[in-house]
Length: 164
Image (cartoon, rainbow, N blue to C red):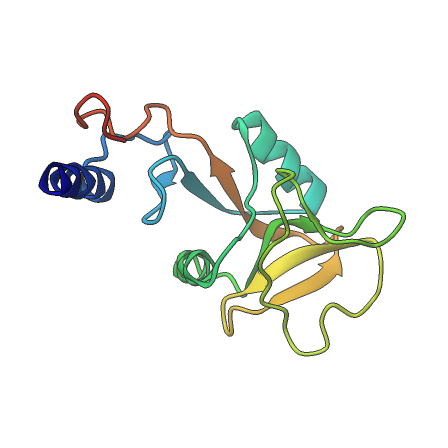
């Protein structure tokens, strides 16, 4: 019994790690960490709210960030377009000044820069390409931005039945 279970677990791990037929919308790239996420970086500088609208029209959101790997990947991608800072999908534009993601996912990981967050409400979140740290900034500033969008075709299409 154990050898069959072991083989099944190995097959599932192999399938999830290497078999991805996901396709992203034009202008987006597949996340190296999750076959169900595509990133779209725009070098077109917009204020935060216009950037959020752009991402929603692309059927996504300004990107949320949930770990150091994702943050580092986004930092590198933003650096490749020559940006100093880019909008990501966090803001504290609520009555309590609590930071939240545009996509309503948990604000479960942070990489604040020195002196951040500074307690000021009504700010939007940018990431620096120089140090990878996050900074609360005035939302009216125009910056390049990241959208997180769904693939047009989901990955893992080549996994056998029962293995995901």
